[in-house]
Image (tube, rainbow, N blue to C red; front, side, top):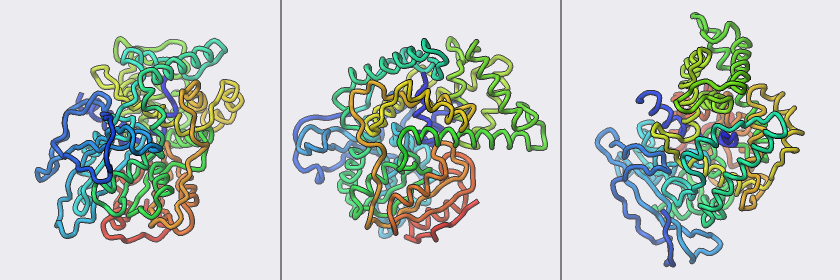
Length: 514
């Protein structure tokens, strides 16, 4: 069973793995002194671990600059700051410009939760070249992720089965199977990661970031958060408002929503993205190969998914493309307009009985590499979400809400509704209904919303602005497609973001880029 709660994961993280596939074929222990005075041992970065997604060490940046990695020790339990420690994996590229104009470190979180910043930042290093002129670019694997005491649950073989399960049960037997499979996965997480599970909440990661700020030698935390990274940034601002430096939130999570409201918002967001994809394909001068009208495109996709529920087709052998895998792959492709051509090709092939491309897209979402190994993004995502989110939903809860989800999205409604049971039987109680991001007294935070964002719908940006509090947030709107805005390379968006981060120029609130 795919975990639909992962649909809020950052497209930046998943697109790195996707493009590699499609186009190419540490914890510590013991007691310690004052962790704020620790010295980081920066060295050349090692080969990414399996939990980080594998692959090769990061390539040098233009001009020959190299990426450096280090491990910061933080308290495992922030309520016992003198107790055992946990290693937080860091990566940096030092500022390229005049040392006298260096501002400090710019810390990135690319979302998930569960995405490895140590592998994601180098993949997009060139996109942030302008920012590197005055900042050391820094990212990290949050606790429970990648090299930072990763949460582990099931084996690769078990995960292959997990992601093939029917995520949209139609009768009592299928519902029972779904819940049993969820409980089995969650029990494996508890068995293999019980030491770290109580300590992976977003508040823990926010406290790690404030320690990171001090260890890096900065008076203020300069920050760029994307997707879930905006939630993490908001929680940081709430806990440490006076320590906020220049901060940007892009692809903004609605901090006022509980998990049900968030899933329903995503159903609307992914449906909007699918509508836009269908409209784009059929409005071109050349014939759309997957439908004559936008509705025809969507009808054919619905028929394909219904057929796959009855009879899967060959995917990446020996695995077959199931309804769940196809839905997951379609959702992955809607994170970026750059992926729409892959979705078109994948649908064409699936209509002819070949599910390979849609399965590649699904594998990218799930963190599966070509060699069959999985990163720990799913395990970390579930662990962090379930530690953060207090509600626990039953099959009766889902069944009651299905009509509203189906109305929001005929294609994704069931899928996202049933994802609400992912924390059933979780070993650690959730912290709250939703995060507290109120941050009176914080420095200006630039909040960038994208009107076509499927994973973090545009309305969430306004909710974040209001929740941060009067006089804190500055809102900017991008009229575009895909998850997030800066990575679209829109000059207006990048100009506003760079102007604030580099020169402290706060754009006029309500600025619109298109």
